[in-house]
Length: 165
Image (cartoon, rainbow, N blue to C red; front, side, top):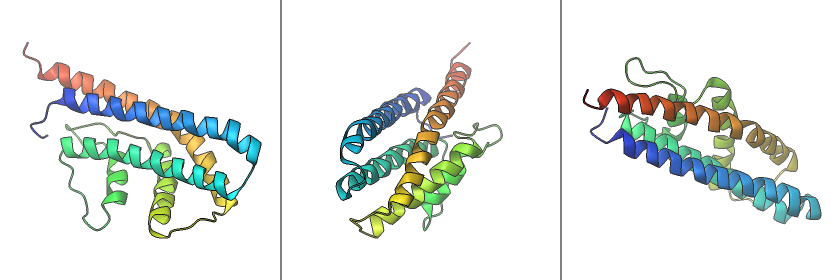
């Protein structure tokens, strides 16, 4: 473990959780309002794609904070994929997994899309793919939130163990 304070890590995680929740609420509002009113247009596709990209980037930032704290070494070439993979690992005597296997599988799809969106600029998205990703985001949000809350509980026990008796 690094010399960083686990209380700071916990605060950073809570901050990222608030952003994830805000993004998800914005996503639900988009589906309920603009999408319901405008339908599957180029504009709504861009909005949906943007929220999915931002949501994954926020989750990845949270994972990066955990990775730095616990000094996980990441593959330099494929660090995004490596980071996500390592978040599902239990590291004996170090930390519990940040996410479970189900959450990992859903987030893998969002990572693939985020990579595609960033490197293959596109304005006309395939709605079949976006519909699939909308379902993934709807499934992953409560899972990710619960997984990260469990990890925060683990950090609380770590903090308690570091306090002088």
